[in-house]
Length: 467
Image 1: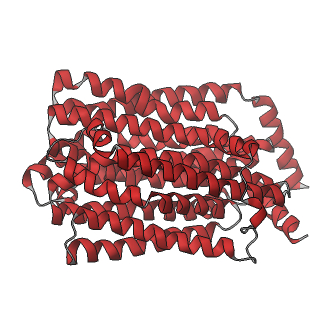
Image 2 (image 1 turned 90 degrees about the horizontal axis):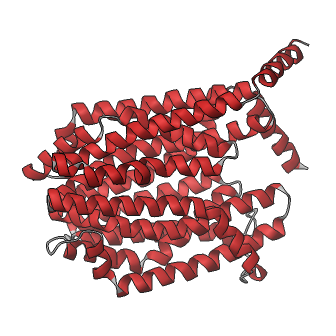
Image 3 (image 1 turned 90 degrees about the vertical axis):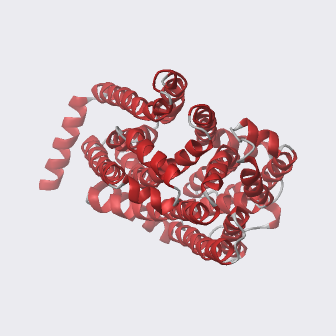
């Protein structure tokens, strides 16, 4: 009875409460969690760049596509399982939720162990494929060996944390991420700065932080008072559940794989036209840019339940107002990011390195890379909007168009004319085209909405309110 009352209260809030309040309520936990994750990636690079050296940053950048593959395979399971569990709980099918939880744990363990085994077996070949040179390979290898050894721990943490969030514990999931970040930051300082373990210390700090986070979420799922907890019968692979998990997780998996491809191609072009230091500069630039983008992503994810509920209820006025409010806030965030990198590029660069050559590459590359950055907020919000109204194919297309469809051709062609600057120009060119396509699709689907029905709906709501 209590769950029904809570559900009705939530429904009423989504349909009636102030949109600004709802955006704040639903976005804040996600923003805090994603910013925390992004923040400790930044601090890792600050310690590595300042203490180990510029080539270590390049080695870390080389490892990013490899790490994206691990993340993609983890996301394939965690996203699918979290979505199914959320739906099953809403349908009051707790037994099926428990079976999905058990299958997710077993699948995650199997996949992460296979990734670790084959990754360690072919580590040099994979890193060279992603652009490692004789100078950067030792750094990338040292980092990835520890990351791969800890991969089962890391992937299990992310999987169970996603399930915790979807099973009515979003605040607890946020605290798990924050705990991971704090442990990682303390250990990075101790292992890299005090003990001088170098890039291996940064990798070990990351794995240990996620091990503490895993202990936190395991305690939750072993607790029989938790709404969803481990039960022995659920730990048995059922292929229909496994296939369902994978089918739903396929969309974010493909997005992560496309990101891996993009970074690998970019690394090769940077290596050809700028050398190892240019790869390091790109690692810093992408870290700073991603820090801003994850804020917008958190905002867009907070928008989704508001838009989804009101779209399903045919309250198109609230759908449109939520969309435009989110676009305005998201664009404001990317404008602030744009101003920061254009006005303070040297200050940002010297946070990561004291090497003058690398700092100059970061400064010049960052300004060119972010010329069109204010447009990115719009593109990210709208692509998530289409997912919210039940159009996942359009959402996936818009999510990958910026990088795969536009950026890769530009990053392959423009350096032939502009050298290293051509690599930096590729992103603003892709941002501009992706935004134009996104705007065109949004306008097209907006015109397809039943305008007369929407207006009638708004009038009816006004009459009801007056009564």
